[in-house]
Length: 153
Image (cartoon, rainbow, N blue to C red; front, side):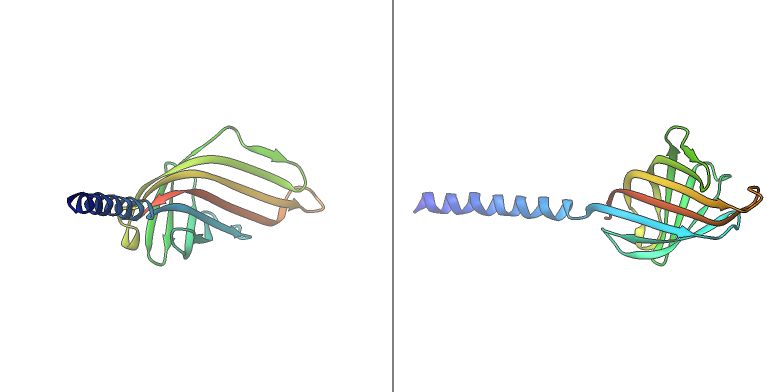
């Protein structure tokens, strides 16, 4: 009889340990941010959607003067990402395409995203077809895609 209580106690401790482990790891998941725009405005305010750990939408301002920090402005709050381009990127001619891959890590979050952590990779691509004079691009398309592992408290 004493042995069965000991066995039940050990089983209960193991179940609690497994439950705690699964609870803490369930807050870390893959998150994807995707956006595209045909705007020629500078800085570009790119509409984005988020899916994975959480679903939200808003915009990302692509500005080269920000010290390599992109801020996602979402309906639930903001997430600041420090990004580091990897390599020189690639370029093609007509359509003119420039693609820049890189890595990022979360600096901070506000609102619903306070305490968020994470890191991952991104690709930013600009594509434009040049006009008959091959000087002025028209039909520009800028896309941004970031994928990473994020944790919310």
